[in-house]
Image (cartoon, rainbow, N blue to C red; front, side, top):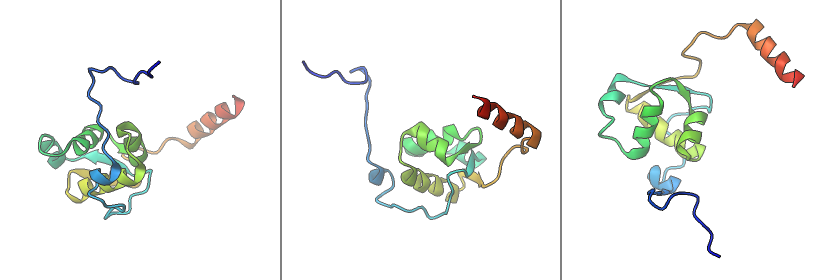
Length: 121
């Protein structure tokens, strides 16, 4: 018996190797930690229809602040390649990056209650 694919045959599923996405580069021009938050800039909005598929997916994900780790998971690309792609978008001014947070830091009391709740599980 032949094994069935994990997708509908009507769906076009293309897997592009990470080195093809990054032009063979394995390191980003910028040092971006996994927790770096990025946000699509006004310039990024203006080029949505002019960038490649993966870059467009990243820009659309970054309409709201999102971390590199989350982007990597959403686009199903290894983190090294994601760093290169995001680094290029930041260098081009299409994404804004911030190592901290785009929102106010949560209250320490709230974090303690969450931690207590997790420990109770």
